[in-house]
Length: 341
Image 1 (cartoon, rainbow, N blue to C red):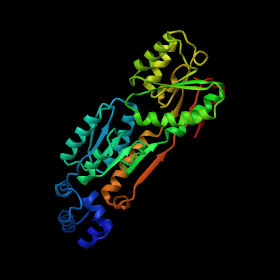
Image 2 (image 1 turned 30 degrees about the vertical axis):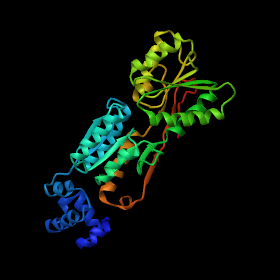
Image 3 (image 1 turned 90 degrees about the vertical axis):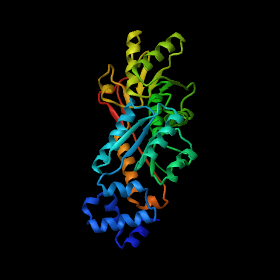
């Protein structure tokens, strides 16, 4: 059943159906009860919807995240919560620790407890596992690019493009050996980083090279990698951290071991944060619209709950762009720092 068919059977407009689903308090009781009865009769939505609306208690939005302590996750969830709170929907956060089995268990547990909808962040689940949501009639949205067809509705930041711009900037400053440090849980991010970096490498001067490392998403992770690279005599021209926390560790390690930034080691970050502008020297970073990404995912999910065109089979893919904030950590000598959209 579509929202239009439900509206016709209940003798109301599509807008009224939307108000019953999202703002039941503004709909007359007789109309609301008639609409809910039609929904239940035709299984338009899970039974939790009608029960919850009658009780005046909106259901919950479940957000599955690989790493609760990650700054990207926190900002994305903040964006989700901003939209959900305006809709009077509580947000339930489930940390999967980058474990697909744990993620699948959480998903089953939450759907059995009648979640309104689910937002997944960089999910490791395969298509057949995600179909459990469709089987239960629970809409879901994915944060992070998916090219496997497992998610029909998703939004993401175009990391490949931003990494390509960063690589061009580094090449223009004369850097040839670039290494990336990423979170081992960030498999989808790593795919996009490799895509953008390898594309830039095709256009780079002779002698350019790339390396990829993983470490925990903490200052210790960044510090220990620098220590390891020094012991192996394999320090690159530039070390690009995946997070602000790793960036702080890299800068601290460089200072601890007597390395001058950027002369001995240039440093950049894939995620800008206030600390990046106050480190010495300030760190070139990619400014990501992460909170807006979370808000976009939540709005997309509520569109599905409203039963608009997306609920009638039209997949949605939204890409947000980052900008490059150029500072002094990679050798920029301009007095005024630059932002490249």
